[in-house]
Each structure stands twice: as structure tokens, then as C-alpha cells.
Image 1 (tube, rainbow over the protein chains, first blue to last red):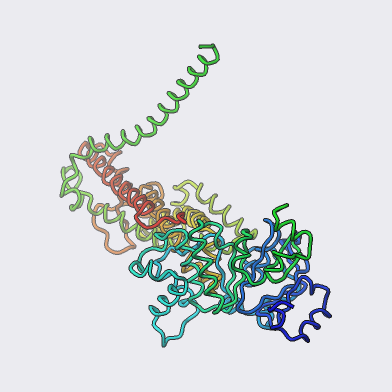
Image 2: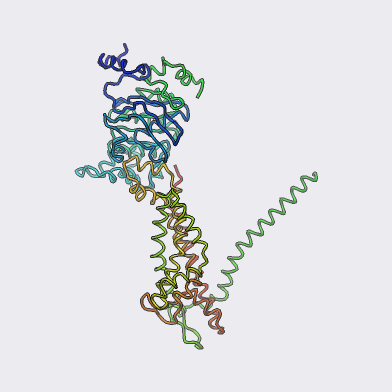
Length: 278
Length: 284
């Protein structure tokens, strides 16, 4: 038994085992932060996700890997219902956030609890300060706190404060790509989300900026639950506690990152990780 | 050198020459108009011309202050009536339009854009002049306002559509509603383009003559308020140019120069806004 497994009660283990044969592809999570069960997703008539069941552990980093078009980003975007910005999309099955049905939740409330960082940095055409303050202005904030303090705290959490403290009222577009992405992370953190979804947050960045963001993820997971989609397998191996491998709209395997990368149960996973396809 | 090489060079030189000449012609037309106006009218622009009323027929001198102010008043009415409709309609089409209704609106706007300006004048004549029983700045402004609508509608729509989806999604991801995201992120991101579209369309209608002939008509005196016949630069140019007096011809040239100056000014202003020092949307 590995050290991770002893953290869970045997009863949980047995229950999970009983529930489905997916025990092999789902690591035991006693009380998941978010979960999907039997999730199907459609773009019009084209089905993009098939029967996805997956538990996202609280205060951990969960990585989703797989070749382009495998559905990992689509899955990520079901977790905050960002798919609804596209017409003719449909989701079937169960999606839960702490036991609450995501599909039935009030949308702004859901998005406040589940933040998102996108593939390319997308700062608003506003000042650095106003970018961070945006979520607070939209959602309201604890009036006992000064907006300036919340902005500073968020920038510190995203390890950007020292670089921008003298230019808070300059345009966010003046920042470098890596700084812009950290700004977007700070912007998401400003409203204290419980979960932060990251959709290939480093794909447009150079290795140094990527390193900074990865360091940041390590620090953030004490404060919130992170789900990251990545093309970069080294990145998944470095930052993630759990890793799910998607292929052609199906979740092939989901387990502790170590197990996925060292002793994957499925041949497809092994092939992808060793670079035989994808 | 083979024959093929030779032929290639000749054709290349020929086409380069033709495209060059055509480009020169386009620029030449503008320069010619500008130069001709400056030569014919420049001498007659003086303080009197800009600040005095027209002199009685037969007396030389006088100015067109009433027409300059009148054009301003008519454009103000046009802007107040046409800009809001165009802007809000454009926002609707870009952000909420998708169905067959939007298709109809878009199609109607394109058709409206192609309606001859004199027909717009007839429309304003029937809707405003006839019920009020006299010509007015209001009627002229409305005729021009209707002409603004399709241009502003379509340009606003295009600039809003050009805002990347990632910006909208960024706002949604922070819990913003669609309305909120449009008002606080999408429109600010497109504002320079939208403002340019508005300015250019205003400059375009500022020179319209036909719709004003039987809406605002003209006036040789100051017109008080908004419901009197009102002088405007284009109509003054028209009236003075077809008159038999040499002095009036000279003043028509001067008025033409003033009008062109105002339009060029607005045009250049619009371009400065578009290429302003504000950060570009595309970076990052």
C-alpha cells in the first residue's frame, strides 16, 4: 500500500470498488470538490465527451492530458459551464460542486466559485488595477476591505506585485505575455474562487514564464482546488497530484499522477506518455 | 535573355506602370480638389466671412456665419437622432442578433444605405415639414440622421464582432452577466473603432445637399430656435454657385473650402483616434 492510500478509510475503498469497475481508472477520493458522473457532451449533433466519470480532489492539482481534440478542454469548460457561450451545446449526466448540481446553479454564482484562466492571456483593455478589481466590481466585495488592499493581495498571491506595484494604473497591455498570464491568474484569485480551472495556461509562454506559473500553482493549491489542462506531459508530472488521460472524448485512465506516469494500467496511456502517438 | 524572360519583364513594367498611374490619379483627384478650392476660395475666407451674415443681393462682401452655425445645428440634430439608434442597433445585431430578424435588420440597413439622399429628403419632408407646415433645422437634421443610422449600425456591429471572444469569456469567467460584460469589457475594447465610424459618417453627411433642399431649406438671416428655415453650408454653396453674381461665386468657393476643411478635420481626428496612443487590442 502506498502512503496515499492509507489516508483513506478502507470502507471508502471498498465502496468505490463496488460501485464500478472504474476503480482502476479513478483514484479513491473521499469527498471530492467537484465530480462528474456519466457525463456526455454534444456540439450540435456531434458528441464530444462520452460517459466521463471523474472526481476532483479538494486542494489538489488535477491535470487533464491527451492529444489535441481529445475533449480535455471541453471537459474543463463543463466545470464552469463556459460551453454555454457557444450555441447548440448540450450536456447530459451529473456534474457536482460540493454535492450541488452545477447545471442548475445560478451562473454568476458558479463562475464566482469556479474561476478560469485561459490558454492565451486575455487581460481587459483596462489598467492593471482595474483588471484585478473587475471581478470585485462585478460581484461586490467585503466593504470592510479597501479595494486597493484586495488588489495588492491578489497580485501578491500571483507573485506579480513586485513587478507591477509602480505601474498599477498603466494599461495591462504593457505587460509581457508571462506577466499578463499571471495578471489573469491574479484577476481570477481576487474573488477567492474555490476551484481554479486552467486551460493550457502556459502554452503561449516561454520556459521561464512557464516556470514562474508552475511555482505559483504549487503555492496556490493550499488555498484552492486546481484543475489544469496541459499538452505538456512534463508539466503534468511536475505539478499534478492526480492525472486523467483523455482520448477521443473518453476518459481512458485517471489516477495518481505517479501511477499514470510510472505504471499506467491501460496500453493507450502508456503509448501516449511514451510518445508513441499523439 | 530568353524571350520568356523578356516578356515577363515587359509585362511586369507595364502592370507596375498602370497600377502606379491609377494610384496617382486617386491621389491627384483629392489634391486637385483641395488645390482648386484653395486657389479659388482661399482668398475670400476672412474674418467677415466667418462671422457676418450674407449681405443683401447686389452688395458685395458679407459672410456665411449663419450657414456655418446652421450646418452645426443640423448636424447636432442628425447626431442626436441617428447616433443612438445606430449604436444601440449595432450592439443588438452584434451581441444578440443571430436569427432571421437580425438578418432582416442587416439587410434593411444595407438597403437604406443605398437609398438616394434626395429620397431621404422627401421622407423628412413628408414626416416633419408637412405636419409642421414650414422648413426647419429639425427636418434637415432628421433627414441626415436617418442617413447616419445604417452606416453607424453596420460599423458598430463590425467593430464589436472584432472583439476577441476570449475577452468576453474572461468577463464571464469572473461572474459577469452578458449585459455587464458587453457594457464593461466588449464596448470599451471596441470604442475607438466605434467612435471612428461615427465621426466618419458625420463627416459624410455634413456635405449632403439634396436632403436639405426641401427640409431645412435656407435662410439669409440667423434662424432662432430649431423650427425655422435654416441656412447650411452645402445649400449655400449650391445657391451661390448657380447665381449670376461673380461675388457669390467667389463666396461659394470659400464656403466649399470651409466645408471641406471641417470634413478633413473630422476625418483626420477620426484617424488619430484609431491609431491613438492607447494600447492596441491585438498585443498579447
